[in-house]
Image 1 (cartoon, helix red, strand yellow):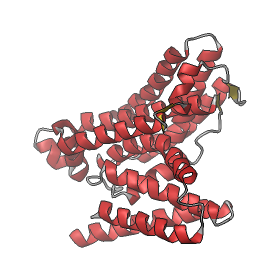
Image 2: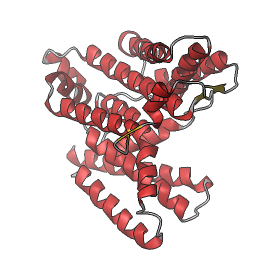
Image 3: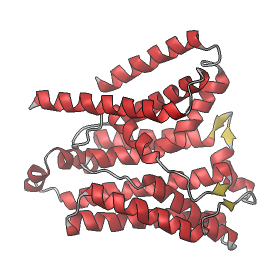
Length: 307
């Protein structure tokens, strides 16, 4: 029902904006909207699975910047860009491993651990880059193809994004291992009594989220040909908002990848609409925050009624 409602809202927004601005439904604008959320949408997939398991990650923007910094610095030192990217993604995965240790073994809450790593990863990024952007315009064309290339007119990053979405959505709906994410998020104690190793499930969700964040960082590096230490600041708001708007509960146990993607598509369309209507940029974050508040309120009321 949430997914159907989002589709209706998106269609209504498109129809309304088609009358408000002649540029909204143009091929160029729709292509720009699709490109604007494709890479960030990869992070949304990981965040959605983590939210379903009962967790949350506030460090995604910082981890993405660190991935770009590590891969970019290694490339400037003469390392092959593909190998540098693998090491960058591995560093993001390692952060996920460390966070999962503090959550599952030490017993700290996701919020506190990810908040700490928001600062740690950003600090490490500043150390690696010395606080200055890394110019990576000398990246080979084969590597730049990831973020800038097209196949039959379709941007490669869009193809990659939809491939990840389809695979993740299928696994969440059909694979037994991924279904355990729902059981863990709904009732961790009951899941443990039924034989599910909930700590492994939670650790896997955290590491997957960090890994997909690292992959998105490499794509952004390829797209822009640079690694900026301040990149990704505030990204967690967009990512969490998209997942929650799409039906993921902050208390865990519910949500879908398809719904989350519809959520980030809605946010991107709202941003495009505000820009075309010449709404000051200062209001855009406030409006997105309001949309997030409304989504969380609806989620809270629904869960309260179920009880």
